[in-house]
Length: 83
Image (cartoon, rainbow, N blue to C red; front, side):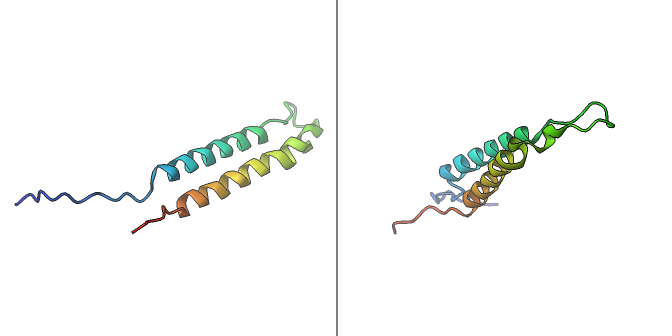
């Protein structure tokens, strides 16, 4: 077997900016899931109205939606070639 010694540059699927966007998207998802957690009751016979507060119905889903949108953008983003 012959080993080729060519100087071909390896092209990766994602660039540095893609990984930064992915990291930010994952961070937004983690924050969204953390905001969504809690609000339960230790006794299943007792109703706790905290599960319907503004944080769990509005803020957490917005964080999660923005995280998913940013993940899709990070995957679809392509560096512009100036060839």
